[in-house]
Length: 245
Picture (cartoon, rainbow, N blue to C red):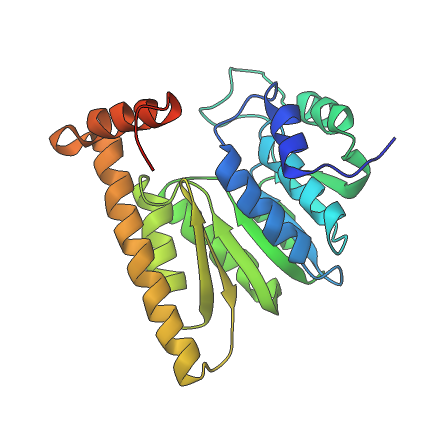
């Protein structure tokens, strides 16, 4: 039976789902999916075994009820063993989470799925080919289907050169997107028209904050000057109550 999942509930459900997707970025997807216009679809490029799909479907159900379309070939790529098929695992995980009825599964590559696509898209989530060329093609294929105020999000920005470069070149520099949000390695923005002066200033401030966050995240990822070790020590001390407020 279907039921509404809170973000904390999704966190519990996805613990047993294989994938590389954290709870903070899951909550970002949850919020974006909840706001997605149900006259359009939420399109996910790259489902794997459903970790982010569950976040999307649960968020959509908690909000306006947009349908999630999960696009993945489920065979091939360097993530799978020869002959491995992840579609049964995706379906089982969606059933276990109670969100299967809100998800359409499309077993195809991004290119194959878009070729036959005719519906508007109110939220595009790109987590497929992480090469620059692959991420760029995913955006270029699907962008014409976006509604006027659609959200677009990429996974593995900041620390993966391909998705980060596409996000900077085609989202940040285009001035057709604003209301930037980020969590862990996920970056998101929303399509817009001409911005007022206050909106433009807010956009610039958001991008400055994103740049600072990215620099910190990359320093942590690379352990620049021991940053990761120092940050982890302080994080553990804070959890153990060793740091004052």
